Length: 615
Image (cartoon, rainbow, N blue to C red; front, side, top):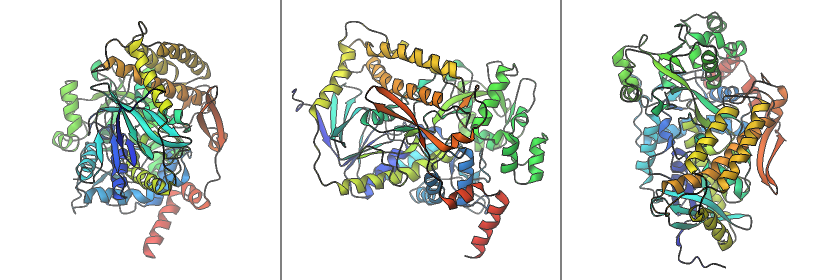
């Protein structure tokens, strides 16, 4: 057996892979529990996708509207997720989000304020009340700043520009991580007792995406290879509003806060088209009253909550339809207009990032003219299957939180729920991993054969005399996913997609990156391809299995929701002969939670008032 004693080895109790909001909050909690913890991040500390969540974090603080309550937030989350959410995760999230937001304030987060000095909150799609605590349109950036500034004093180590390759196991238990330093190309071995995956999704499997280069599904693939299950992976959120021009920034996110603060969507006929796409059932359930519902359905532009704030799946499909039917903007999107509705100085004050983003990247002054926007791949509702209380996967010692964990969002995520998801379940993952480490009764060893295999697979890319170009393979994969597993899907397209992915998989097996391992971006790109392939195949196979349209999964050959679709989750796991997909029956929902989610809004609001009056 090869001797790997010369490989750099670093020991921690717990390794957290990913330094976004979920990973940092988990690390803070691990340190608070007295664990020796290390954060491994693919890029630099602070370069996290959390900063792209601009509009705010959802929590029923009740500062902007005192009628808000965790039960109503829970109800909105379940309905937004088309009732496919994990019930207890949605409950925990709604109950604990206010405490986690207030905690951030204690740690130094500088939120926008109401006139009375409370944390201000804004409207967002799918939320009944203004619920998003925000910092202009830079809320995610403030969240990361706060967690970093607080976290660096908590005693955990940060290993930057270090990419995790393989999870190592001693029997069934996680015992370490094989990784490499991106600058030198040298391998590093992290010995640990538990791993928390907080690596986000895999938006880079599509061409048009708000995600940057890091989002290649690393945690999803590592967990899958280690024996964890993927759940609800067919549900991919296409954010309705990404930039569509110029091509260099196509897909860059345009925050929902633009619509939350008064922006409206228009087609090339200057028609406010979203009134034509309001689901009648949704209007009746979401509007403040029957009168308000009728105003929506009758196209009354004076309605208090505009149809532009319908859930993201509805708005994304509406924009796609307008473009396909010839009513799109010159560059293949639609127009988002806030200039005609909000004073210029207020736009600059409330949406400073959007103002500068369009001014500098597209030479558009959003205080004077509309933006061109269109759907962009944004978020994975599905991910690694976890226990709702501990965030542990099916693999002992392996935990997941944030976007790479499934359960909270069901078939569709409400805007603003991502940031509160990170801090609620990041904390729970840290607690769960710490308790697991405390419960371990045996010492764990590193399996050197696993290390040897991981190194051999990584270096084979450099040692081939010839092979495929990794950048061309990635471009090919993105084209296939866009063509066959995009916003709308059919059985024929998904089957064609699987055939094409099988072809690309053979190319990945023969990928070649010229040069040495030091400072070699081609090697870095080639190493990402295996993760992208696993996630792409899982999404496509799961989408083929779910024969209905629900939330972020739209089948043209199975339009509309099927009542049977609520009775199962689609589970993807690694079998002896490759990837396996199955339907797993869902548990009966807790009676009280089911009652809350299905209650009429009037009855639930009355119930909340009674609770408050009774102390």
